[in-house]
Length: 348
Image (cartoon, rainbow, N blue to C red; front, side, top):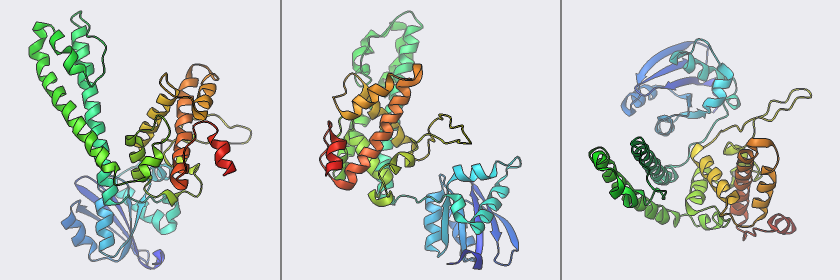
């Protein structure tokens, strides 16, 4: 389908209303506002045969599926790239829709198109993220309880978040029980829900045999390995394993000009949840419970250099190497050797 011979439509998807900019093949334009519902979308786009450009967002998945079923060519634009191109002082929904249409007509590579993962992997990924939401909720409740008790001159003993509601409930001062007892009820229920989700995650992981391969390195559990498989989805999407680090947003930004090449923060592109899991795994690898490995030795050596932020940079660097390593294991299916892996891998 040649984009310059058909209509090009830019859609700025809002939660309730969508701004639509139609750029006809002869250069004429139209602007519309339609409701962001399946019925309204189907009614409007049934009348057009077009190349439709939308941005990644809460509604982009189902909208792109619907438009493809209606016979349209759909490009899902990377919002980071669109923002970098526009940086307009007069940002409106209609202006954004027009920008999408004109960029799509000019060259879709400018939009750095992304591909939504399938419904099944997305649904399985939701299981992991639901557990994560429960864990974060539990952490907030625990911190709140500790803070309230501390403000009354008392301190609760150190313990894991999992055991907090059992070990500290009877230690709450009597005058605080009316305020904190409902939170302990919630913590008890959340703890049970987390355990239920963990069993569901184990069951979900059984549907993806590659999870066993990716969970070989110490510090990478089933949760992280499964998230990696579901987010990346296709192990053949990268020509080289080192591209995995950039995909997850663990590659440093570049601002090279002339002789200047400053050290910048990572891009934070890609899925933030997977990136956080990999950084957590790296923290475990470098921590007191980490086992001896080339990756740990490299990271600890890196942490010795660079001042007070060296440890943080080393953790991110290990997470980046771990992302590359996991993709390599996924592609080859080989047995991971924590010591001498690089030499063994190159020799093979």
